[in-house]
Amino acid sequence: MDEYIKKLLVAAGEAGITAAEVYLASSDRFRAMCQQGVINNYTVNSTRGLSLRGIYNGRMGYAGTEAFDDESIAQLVSGVIQSATISEDDSVQEIYPGDKEYPDVDNYAPELDSVTPEEKLDYIREAEKTLLACDPRIAAATYNMISTASGTVRIVNSYGLDLQMRDNVFVSYINALARDNGQSAGESAMCVGRTFRKEEAVRTAKEAAEKTLFMLGAEPVKSGVYRTIFDPYAMGDLLGVFSGIFSSENAQQNMSLLAGREGEKIASDVVTLVDDPLLKGGFESRAFDDEGVACRTLNVVEDGVLRTLLYNLKTARKAGVKSTGSARKAGYAAPVRVAPSNFFFKPGTKSLDELMQDVGEGLVITEVGGLHAGANPMSGDFSLIAEGYTVHEGKKDRPVEQITVAGNFYELLKSIRAVGSDLVFPGGGIGSPSVDVGELRVSGK
Image (tube, rainbow, N blue to C red; front, side, top):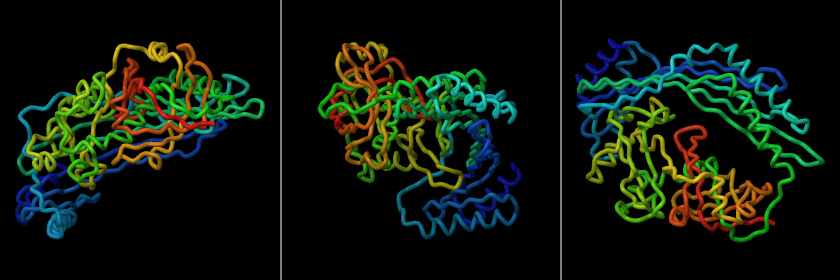
């Protein structure tokens, strides 16, 4: 591969591509499901792909391949030239020479890659067995999955930059169905990390059972305005949908109302939003972004003030600022965009129980649905199907479902009264603790 990359960069230079970058990505994935003790949807695959990105006549061109021979070198170089020639993007773009230093980020756990397929299958069998044994009202595990992935990214360019990162991850997810007296409920639990522990199968199964049994008999509350807390999972989902408003790319395309507002107060004093690619154990932690820029921790919003948007090289040049190391590619052949890494509300000091005590009477939202149809990332408006439970005299009370919560994310940031201490990253780089969002309009019965 070293020889192939060297030949590719030489060929690019000889063809008139003034600066070029090779982006190589490979991955190994395992996925399986179990229902009624039977293993199904068993999938194992390995992929490796490479893209060449380069400047030709002042414009950026892209090309990609999964073949690594002399013929592919000529095709990649030709592809970059053709892509740059027909590009209508006349903004100044660049291949990054590199930084003097890069942070030390270790996202790879060798022991995870040594877990055998048999051990993984035993894990989901044990999860289903544990779930069904929790209570006679548990009727089935409607979804019971395990997945592992291991990948490597390497960036090499014509300036001599050569960076590499490796990571792996483990995910298990189980959904329970309970029935009682003509009523039914379904809830789920998951485990995400870089450590494979068989006891997590028992823990997640019991958590799914407990959540599901609690929701039996849930019903809507009366429509009205309620003091509302979003738990970490619901708030993380909401933040994920609206995370794009902090992208400079969206701001420059008039797709975010935060354009030109850096330095302004946009949230309550208790709100600090962090983007931390250096977070130890973070699912999106990395030493460099997908353009080779060294990553650093950012307070995007600090004490309610918008300190910075997220920038890649292109949007930073346009704004006259430095890249924040937020360049991301959806795949080896995808164009460079802007996206956060580990993005979360900085936790406060109060537990969820303490937040409920402060609220006294209200709602805790544990799940929101219809996120893509019911949320408008441009305007900030949302109207989402939700479930959770009531808070009575400061304590968890009765389950609630079939309600709709509505508001505006920009206004919600300003109305936040407290941020909890229970920070969770449910299944990726977007995380949150429980958040007391003040009053929210709820449609029910």
